[in-house]
Every structure is written in C-alpha cells, then in structure tokens.
Length: 558
Image (tube, rainbow, N blue to C red; front, side, top):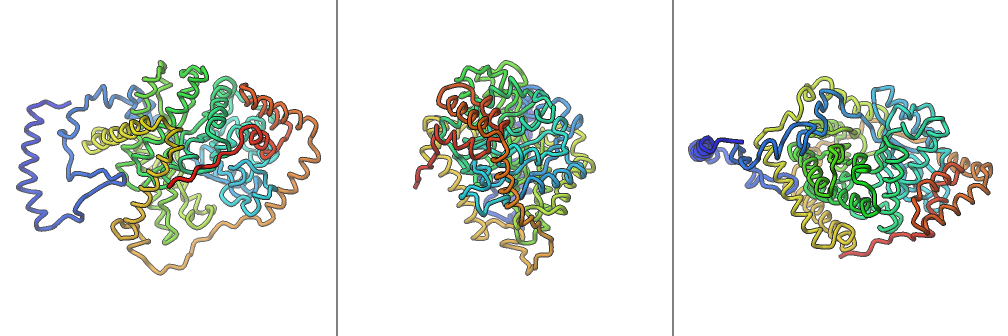
C-alpha cells in the first residue's frame, strides 16, 4: 500500500524521533511500565506507522464492507443503513415474571429479545425434579413445557420480533417449544426469526452445561441445521459462542481461536452428513464477548470476519452469504464489580462501543447490578439507554469501520489472526477439536490464562478500579431485584396439572417414536416437535435421549 521510498523516509524519521525526542523525554519522565501488553499478552509498541503494515495489500487483506474478506463489515452499508439489534439478556423466576420484563424492555426501545434460562432448564430437568430444587429461576427463567413457553411469549409478536435463546444441551427441544408456540398461534415457522445458541463444544470447553456425550450432541446439532434451513429458513440454528470461553478466563486470542475452531468443526460435521455448505452456512451465527481492552476487542471482531471468510472458502463455500460472519456481542459479565457498582456503567459503555466499532449485528449491554443480583428494572433500562446513546448521539455509526486504516488497529488485527492460526495448528496436531477437548487442552489453556490474570490483580500488577485501587467504604445504595417467592410452587402446580390434563397416551406414543428415531439415524427434530406439541415436558423428552445416548461425564484432568 505504500511507496518503498516513502517507507524508507518514514523508517528514518522514526529512528530520529525515537533517538532525539522520545528517548530524551523518557529519561526525564519514565514510562509507567517496563512493558506494555494487552490482555492476550501481546507486547504493544510505543507507536505504529505504515512500516508495521507494509506487507498488507488493501484489496486482498482489507477490502470494502460487504465484500471479501469482509474485514470491514459483512454489509455494504453497515450501521449507516441499519443499526444493530438491541437485546438485553433477560430471564428470571417464572415465565410470567419474565414476560413482564420482555414487555417492559420492548416498551423502552429494545428491538430483539434474548432468553436466559435457569440451570435446571439448561440441564434438561423439570422444575419439580429433585435436582432442580433450590435453583428455580435464579439465573434465568424456568421452562419445563410448551405451556411455559406459551406464557413466556404471551402478547409478544413473535412473527415480528427476533428471539435469541441461550440454551445448549437441550437446545433442540427448547427451540421446538418456540416453533410449536408460533404454530399454535397460527404463525408459520417459515417467517419466525431468531437464534438458538446450540453450541455444545464450548460447553465441554468452558461453561459445562452439557447433557449428552459429544457424538450424539453433534448429531442433534446437525439435525437442527438440516431442519432449520429446510423448515425454519429465517432462524440461526447455532450461535457459536466465544462469550463463555472468555468468561471462563481465556484471553481475547484464545476466545477467537477456540470459537472459530468450534465453528469449523460444526461445518465439517454438517458436510459429513451430506449437507450442502451453501445451504446451511448462511444461517450460522457467532457470539462474542466485549472485554475491557478497547482496541484488542475491535481487532478481534475484524480478524474474526477475515479468518471465517478464508476458512469457509477453503471448505468449498461458493456463495458470498456463506462467508459472512454475523455476530452478537455481550459486554463482559466477568468484569463487573460488586464494589462501586455504578462505575460498571462506564465499563459497559466502553465495551459496547468496541462492539459497535467492531461491526456487531446485535448487542447486549450488561446492567450495573449484575455482580450482586439479576438486574433491576432501573439498571436494565440504563443498560439499554447506553446502546441508544451510542446509536443516536455519539456519531460513531456515521461512517463504516471508522478505525480501519489505523496503523495500530490493522497491525493488531493481523497479529490476532496470526496467533489464531498458531492455535489452529496446535489443535490439529492433537487430532482436532473433540480430541483436544478429551485431552483437556482447551481447559488447561483457559485455566492458565485465568490464573495469570487473577495473580496480576492480587499482586496489584493490574488495576481494577474499586477493587484493588481507588477503593472506598461504600454501603450499597442501589435497589436489587426481588423475585416472587411463590413462583416455584406455581410452576410445580402447573406441571402437575399439565400431566393430568394432557392426552397422556398421545404423549407416550410420541416419546416412544422419538426413542426409536434416536436409536436409528433419522433427523430427530420432527419427532421432538411432536413430543412438544403433545405437551411432553423438557425433562421427559431429555430422559428419552438420556436413555439412548447416556450422559457425558467429564474426565478428571490434572
């Protein structure tokens, strides 16, 4: 991109500047650190110039928005034409309580819904199961049957609003409930839109809410791919998630490499089934974390698009839409502090801005009180207003990829891609993603990064404002959410009533048909939908699959 003679002049000028300007001032006013590094441990130089990106070719390596390699954005107009979908991750207690929160958010300008489920739901248990007691609604909404899904979305236009659901082990079943609810309301599944997370590989790697072993889990995921592009064409049947990998303690580079590695593994599994990559790839989506290192996060999103486009092309994708990396971003829950919770608003604003500048298609901003409790109405409204201020007042959406061309950003984007491919090589030598999971590779890498980060905080080598510096004696002054204490018993009563009033012979027949399909090699989605329509509960349906596939027990790794 640069004239060789001009580059030489820049190099000479930089040497002169460092010797006669920079070094002299450093001797008088020493730098704050011996070495500057970002959160991935990449050393950051004092200044970046065209010399650092002289190897880049604009059309080949950077390009234009909406064109290969999609570094500058997946759409030609980006946020000038359409703002990102504004979502707030919401769910607590009963379906009734969460339905009220959804309506509140939509009234205040949210443009898409996002469902958080409680732990019994994530693990495929009904609320009245012995293992579910005490966990009802604590980290999300409890959904045990189609009846709960009907209440959750009562009065909400599911044919107009897209819904994202953070569910993995039982994702196919919960998705079937959403589809069945739409059908029961006379809404065609051809027009409903949204996303199921459905990313089981990252569960084995980081979050651990798995149910079945890897092979049948991958089969279920490919079943959703196939059913989705044929029957629910506007639905994203997976959200390949780096968010939980980052929350578990990974660096930005590890988040990028492990997430894309998982994505490639899903594509290969679908192709092995015989699915056409250009039919299912356009409905793949991603989910990233927005952490504190502002420029590193922006470079991560830009690098992700370029790497994905390259890798899908290698795998044989022909259509431009198959190469697009569309992603949702959530600000980093692990960075929120219980100390001085109001300053979390500042952290979230900075993180959200990095996601917007990085070209996200959808965004969730965390609430200031989430280190203490599920978000209150006031806190969640401020979090939503944060997105609206960035969109409407900051001016950052007026031009596309405004930091593109920055010597530092382009260098850092390139460096993150280089380090990602180094991880790809290491995983390949271990036999691929599933083999690397079984050998504990990802888990060890994340644990080591998390330990290093925490040591830096504990030893005051990394400042966390309000935690290890700038501390105050502060009595909590913000109001916290309180859930309905009767919600769990109401849910249990509803389950008891449902089991008495449904057509139990039909339910049993559909569960038996699902068992037979699971024992064979048919796509299980039509059978799961039949079970859901006959009001089989989440636990009953998962138990059928547990009986065929067994449950995954993670090996001890030292």
